Length: 468
Ligand code: ADP
Ligand code: G6P
Image (tube, rainbow, N blue to C red; front, side, top):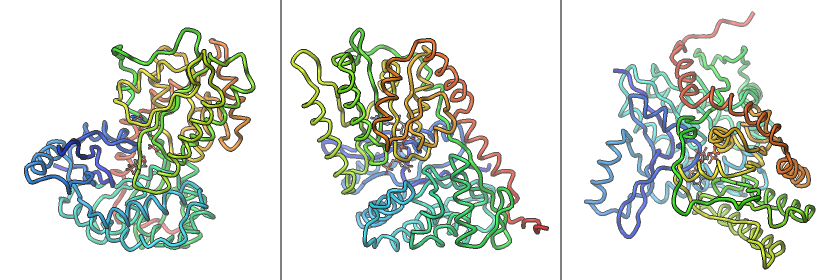
């Protein structure tokens, strides 16, 4: 039987340790939460890094391995050196900022490239060892850009798809990468390359023309006699999960009567625009004394990439600004305006919070898609709530009924928050109806089916017709 081999750096579960015991928890981030549903419906294996198993004793390790096997996952273990160099220094130290246009974060020296190649080769060996003729291989995200090319060399007849979960930057930015040609050649090992938006696909085509000289014909390229297709497949969410009724929990967070709850839910990442968002909320509080005591911001930040210095710095700066705003805007009679929590939440609790919020603030300075925006809309089965959404999130292209903001314009963002708080119920409902209709229609199962159907349709190794 033909199987789907999903390959990503991180598995959908991460193994950690608490009081010496191994704990296996769902992984955080859009790739894991999004792909989990389609993978459960598929036949096949998910190949990826399981987290740090080095501190487990033999018995703990055996138990974890069994659990991973039962989940149809195959771990690719990484040493401390590999993780530091490939994951921290290169994937998250160089690729992540370049692809998110944060050029001042590019380090002066990055020694991670060789290790990046090495770990991609390690993944290639793990996939090739599992591969049986007829299987479909689906590689995900920026940590594994070289993998499609490496697999193509080892498995020339394999059907290989690649999906990028982050933006593909303008070619003018992409070409700053010293390893730009190798990266493109790696991606071009796939038969089908997917992006979240048409503009990322256009940026990719322009990089390929400029740097490798391959001219695309509509959405196809001829590469060494093979046909490679590339286009947008905007990712959706598992709508069933987010529309299901939530059971009220004891001690659940509830806004006070008459209070407007502003909500932010993010991985703690410097691309999410959390500091700018908090400054905008402070501006609203300053400009609108009538809202003092009636406006509360709940910011939930899930810990992410804590071993990377830039993330440690960003966390410190977010926490400083939370303290500074609460210091400036609190009174003896009202609760502090910013309620900040640095931890992950179970999905059911997240859904209750989406439902309790008056206004959801999604304000990244760049984001491949941003699934939180879609989760919020899906969860609003009551048809109410306002979404304030950055125009630099991929989701903005599909969510025109949101209040679009430019996160670099903090005053404009503050005005949008005021507009959201003051919006009439009629307008809120009509905007939310438009948002929900699209989110519910194009869910993550449809996304995976569309991508895999397009991949199944690709003639492997077929040359392009010569252009007239
Ligand atoms: P990214 O992939 O950059 O993390 P997305 O918005 O696409 O951004 O996806 C984030 C995912 O992580 C969503 O599915 C969201 O529900 C989940 N998530 C974010 N913050 C938390 C949190 N504090 N607790 C639990 N899940 C979270
Ligand atoms: C984003 C990336 C994913 C990544 C996730 C969590 O969603 O696109 O590839 O898995 O963040 O980041 P982490 O570094 O913890 O895997």
